[in-house]
Image (cartoon, rainbow, N blue to C red; front, top):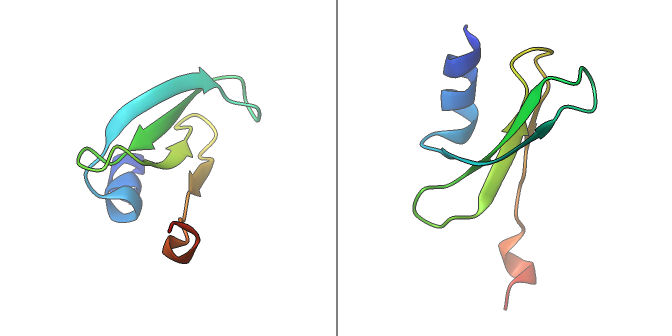
Length: 62
């Protein structure tokens, strides 16, 4: 599975929200957001393969 296919399976549709320097390898770490809700869904670095999915607990949002 390629990196983009991994992102497709984890994040689905996404848009680039922000780009920072990756703390692991100093390459571009890209933050993604859902194109509809605009909530940040996760971050990923193609260089080192670091991926993090942000999970939101809906019960905390009243």
